[in-house]
Length: 195
Ligand code: GLN
Image 1 (cartoon, protein in one colour):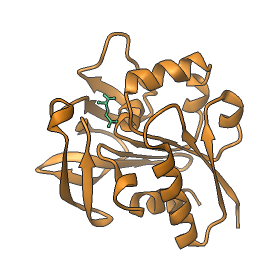
Image 2 (cartoon, rainbow, N blue to C red):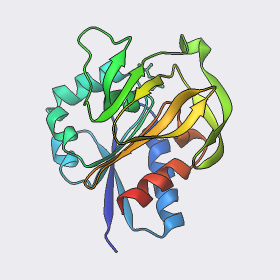
Image 3 (cartoon, helix red, strand yellow):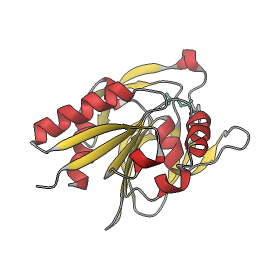
């Protein structure tokens, strides 16, 4: 069985929560996994898959660029992005800040801050392809449209809030909410798809 190294981009956001959820998911799957925090190009070069946590997508972009990691992240074949991480994966973003760019890896268009301000954050029960779960939306984006190779995994009032893009060599997973706060099912699904 291959021993996987999963990196969590660790500039800000739910780093510890993602680490814990990934370790618990690996334990459940009886998969040998090492989870590391990634802040440098060197750390990035050692991983099989990367998790991009929530936070502020323009800030995450700037910090990745400062560390010279931007182009290298694009080459990671398996990436799971939550909230700001999902924004980073998208080909197109609405409501972007000045100079903001994305990794352009997923064929989706995503609207930043689609539900309003920080105080408009909310928690709801969500029916997903992985079962029903509580979902926390924190100044969350909404996936406006999807294209080639993308499959919807969850909708909230007809709005797409989770999806995946799978090819023979890559697997990308995006959620507008924060599964690391309420469930390990998305982490488990991510691991299953990259084993
Ligand atoms: N509003 C943030 C952004 O645009 C995302 C919020 C989050 O990750 N919880 O990047």
